[in-house]
Structures are given as C-alpha cells and as structure tokens.
Image 1 (cartoon, rainbow, N blue to C red):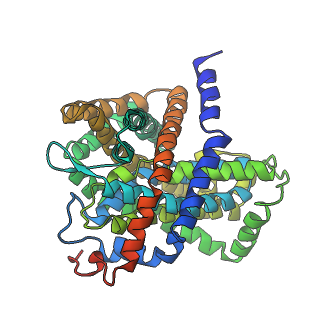
Image 2 (tube, rainbow, N blue to C red):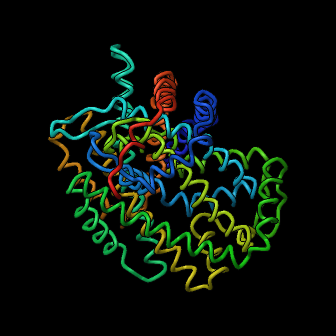
Length: 458
C-alpha cells in the first residue's frame, strides 16, 4: 500500500459521515437556537458589511469590511470553480440543492464562530488583536483538556496553511497558466511567492488592504462573466432550477458522459463540496474576524455571516447554473476542466478558458494571503511571535515548491488537516453556544446598538 493509499483511507474516515453530520447538525442547532439569525438579520448584516463598513471607537486592527474581505480571500477560491464542478459531475444537479442547504446552515455556524472570536480575543505581544478557535477553545474552562484541544486545532491549522492554503494553490495556478498560456511552472511559483511576500510581510493590515482590492475585483470579474452566460441562457433558468430540485430527492439517470447518481451521492457531494468551499465550522475565518475593529462581537459576527452567503449562495450558485445551462455537466469532465468547458460554451473557447484561468489564478492567490495569516496566528498561539517571520519565509518558499511538484499526497494530507480543525472547533461552538445566545439577545434588545449609532464614512 502506498503513502497516498494510506492518506486516502485516513481522509475517508476524517471526512466521513460522522463529520458531515456533525457539521450540518451544529449549523442546524445554532440556527434554531439563535432564532434563524441568518434569515432575520441578513439585510442588516449586508448593510454593516458593505454600506457602513467600519466602526468608530472599537478595538481592533482592521475594519469590518477588511475583515470580511480577508476571510473571503481565503474561502472564495478553487472550491468555487473546481469544487462545484466536482459536486455536479459526481452527484448530479441535485448536489447543488444540498450545497445550498449547507450554506444556509453554515451561516449560523459562521456567525457563532466570529462572535466567539471577537468575544474572547486577546492582545498579542505587540498589542494587536489575536483570536479564533485556539483562543476561545481554551477559554471554555481551566481543565488542561481544553488547552490541549486548542493546541490540536492550532497544529492542524498550521499544517493546513502550508498545504491547502499554500502549496496546492500555487500548484493549481501553475498548471492552469502552463496549460492555457504555456507559462513555465517555476516562473509562476516565483512570481506568486514574491507577490505573496510583499503582502504578508507587512502583517494583517497589509493583508487586509490587499484583500480589499483583490477580492471585489476577482468576484466581480468572475460573476460578470457568469451573469452574461446566464443572460444568454435566461429562458433555461427555470428548467435548471427544476432539475436541481428534482434530483435533490430523486436519482439522476445517466446521460451523455454523466454516469448517473443516487440521492445519497448527490447529498454527500453537495454537503462535502459546500463545506469545502465556505469553510463554515472549520474555524479558519474567525481568526480574521478577531482582528476587526469593533465594539460589539455581534456586529462583526453578522458581517462574517455574509461570507458564507456570498461564497456559497451567490458565487457557487452561478458556477452551478452555468455548468447546467450550457449542458457541460453531461460532458464527462470533472473539476476545473468542467467549469472551463462550461464557460467556453457560453463565451467562446478562447474567452471562456481565459476567464476561468484568470479567475483561478486570482482566487488561488487571494487564498494564499488569507491562509498565511491563519497559519501565522495559529503558530503564534503555540510558540509566540518569535517564529512569525520564519513562518512567512517558509510559506513563500513552499509556494515555489508547490508550483513545480506533483501534490496528490499534499492535497490529501491537507484535506485531513482541514477536517481535524473542525472537530475541536465544533465542540467549542456547542459548548459556548449559550454565550452566543446571550450576546445575540443583548444586541437585539438594545434600543440603538452601538454599531448603528455613529459610523465613520467608508
């Protein structure tokens, strides 16, 4: 048995039915506990994120908007392009419905994660805010088991940052640029490493500023292209939505290159790829939320909640509809190749390939800068700030290594580390859910929440 076989076996256990049920059930539990906050407060959350954008007087290092963009930089990525395509290729159109359900439940999870990250955040050795699961897990109680669980999360986060947030990203970009434009893989790796170094060596404020420029541009570029294709196929949208709803509860028969899928396969693929895309419950994005300049943990929690809404219910949905409406889902292709095929059918071969390749490059680059911050903060919780610079240098070096390597083992090992982040985080969310409920009730009961009292101009 090879190393890859062993890792695939372990990955199957880690990302098996128990974790998927735990992630979904936690989201549903928090949804009911918090009174469906993702539905009742979504409009206010979007206003905080995109209209008000920042507060006066609160502690923190970056604005609401910058914290959201930093988190989105790490989550809007390859999963939105390749992950959605994989879900449809294996699970059929019905997988999209289960992806939506995962996103809706995940919004409550994301809200709770961010609330706890701000509630329990601390000042680091340089006076900047630091928080996330490695902090709020340890805050559950004085028993050494909680500190051990927090450390386990941090170790998994560091490993995942080098894999899913670093080497696999540069590898994907290098392969895409080499395949589409003939760019040497080593050159792509060097350029990405230099571009990443310029940003991450400046700390969270530089990362937030870069994300605030890159993320809106990349989402608008990709969304505008997708919306144009949807406009071309607008008459078929009701049909595509009907296909999604039908095959969410009935098997999808084989057609063209599509092999067919049962309802169980559709549900499993939709849930798994939805979680992979928006990372709700994994505990990564609350690390960025903890740095937000805010006086109220609920305010930033609401802003962070919109991350899952944007990632899964908007960007992933557009990818899915393009794949279905163009008929590409019957081609037998999978992953990024399937999405490229769909966009090529809608925009023409050259334009479609260019849009997907450029989007993939931007999505992957933004993921590297977001995950570098997550990994740095996780390492800091284990060893202090003294290793921060060395971490960043190793991170940039591994971007070059990843671009020129075959990374099947790294992909799988990173996937395992991602799953292992979820277990301690979900335990903490359930244990601290009464705190989230109390904070939410306090915010809703206030006649004029502080965030809405006086704001700086964006």
